[in-house]
Length: 319
Image 1: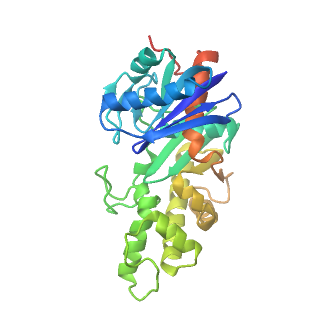
Image 2: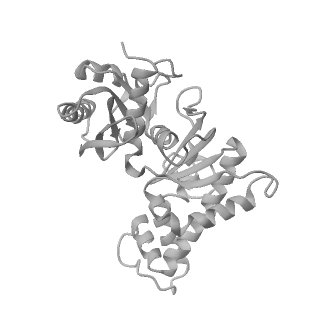
């Protein structure tokens, strides 16, 4: 049985045909349009293109936003036009196929649980380091989403009281210190604090991607920024471990591509500061295995469950 997973992000709509083993067989991609109706049209066009080439049984959407408890609608998506929208029902009507939704980080975590770095773990946490931090918690393979479908917002845990301002309205959120955006901000602060420190980062916008590239070349400012990211990442891991006691923490997102520059140090810091350090088992900290396709694979897997195992918790068919 083949299903389609669609990763509906703020910049692009990526869709893929996925088999039962988690392999992506065919893909398509288009820019994310503005407005609810154009967005639905873009999703329908992507799925229709793939169903013209493959026999598809169901569709899953991985959405960067708050998904309703029954996984059929979107409450709010900060970078998309959907607001309190019954997306699954509308998509089913247009496509003639069952449609189910999931938060994009939950979808990625499900993919890693079924096919990747969290396979078989009783309690697994995914920390997705990108522009911000996305978080997901799986217990026995089921996503924990809280009473109203918005948990866990790990990126907005406050690690530094009175720290950097966050777009969420708080200060000192974890993602202000451990994301691609944070990496650039740390480098800028370091250049202002230590103007005599030689660096290749002067003279242009300082992005996380530029800092990572400079760190690989041994740039002192970039390396120090990576070291700070490692410390704050370890602090966050310790907080996550204190609350959830996971078996495995999977680090994904675009920043994870630079994991060799910071992950070992983050593990060491986590092991040193977690409550009961030295007297408790530690979560394995692993990098994600499915990369940019994780959201597609997870959404398609959820769609397959909709057909083959509709009794799974949280699965409902749209009417």
